[in-house]
Image 1 (cartoon, rainbow, N blue to C red):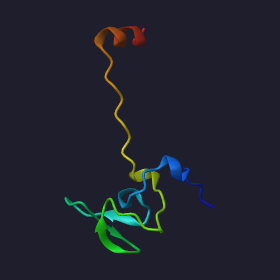
Image 2 (cartoon, one colour):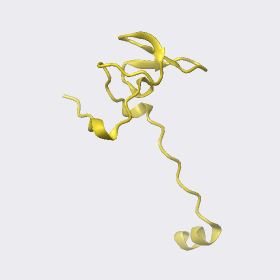
Image 3 (cartoon, rainbow, N blue to C red):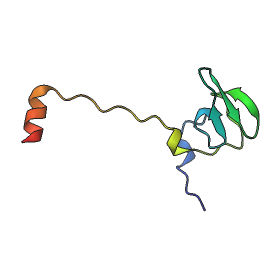
Image 4 (cartoon, one colour):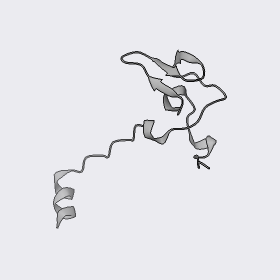
Length: 71
């Protein structure tokens, strides 16, 4: 059985659904259940796919902190 993150922590949208495939250069996804829908659409078949998440970038350290971290 798959383990999914709690629903309260996930922003539900078709762009992050397991059933959806992003279409090139547009704001639509191709859903296996509903067909072509807007990427912000949500249906009852939503299953979170962690591989479609875009992680936040790490902040760049100033030069002085990089030197002390490498030593």
